[in-house]
Amino acid sequence: MSVNGAIDNKRKLDFLLAAAISVAMVVLILLVQQYAASARVVVSAPPKADPIAVFPDFASIPNVNVKKQQFFDYLQDFILAENNDLANTRRQLLNYAAIVNTGVALSARERGWLLELVSTYRVETGLNSDKEIVDELLKRVDQIPVSLVLAQAANESAWGTSRFTLEGNNVFGQWCFEEGCGIVPRQRVSGATHEVRRFTSVESAVEAYFLNINSQRAYDYFRELRAYMREQKQELDSMVLAFGLGRYSQRGDHYVDEVQTLIIQNRLRSRDRG
Image (cartoon, rainbow, N blue to C red; front, side, top):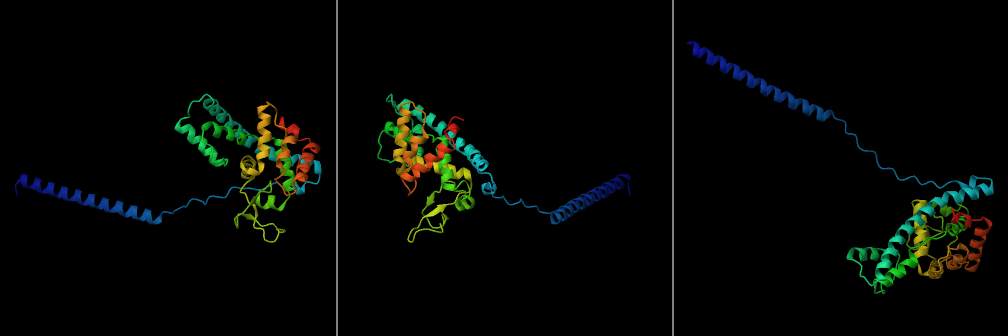
């Protein structure tokens, strides 16, 4: 065999050996990947926990004055937060009022925002002009004095110890009328279908209370009183506004007296300034 032939044969052998090594490496890699896949431990994400909503145990506080103080302190932050949100929305609404009062039409985006409020606050759709809509919304999108809200909460929740408060975060005794929407009262009158609404948190109960007062027809007089105070540049007076809550309870005028008494006895109006 010539020298050139020997070299060619060696090159062929080297090529075949390299090819064999490459194939072996590919096979080895595939085997390693397959083993790793079969041995991999799949760790699933833990299920999302429901938000913790534990109402404070005010019934366990033996000192009445301490219990009242802690009850008011606990709720006040929720009330202030809701009033702050309302104040921000109202400021924007007042800007729109300034626009429509000059006769300038609102943009499509601005009117869309108004119509969202119309739906939220249950404004009747019979109002035609932007000015009429804004004027009506200004009666509804407004704050409620802390003192009045706290007095109602104390009355309706028995100072945070009622069954509906502990089982459903319902601090204000709000009703609902669909089966299964809440808690059935043990002493519900025969033939009645209402339930006491269940809330996921105290925050949502406070939001629902504010929307209730600011939207339902039963509290038109309350809103008229509040609007008059605004027109006269007066501070919102919880003692006067309480007269607009006669339809909140079947006790009517007696309920108004109870709320006003709670405001006076617990000096709650001082919290309106805090």
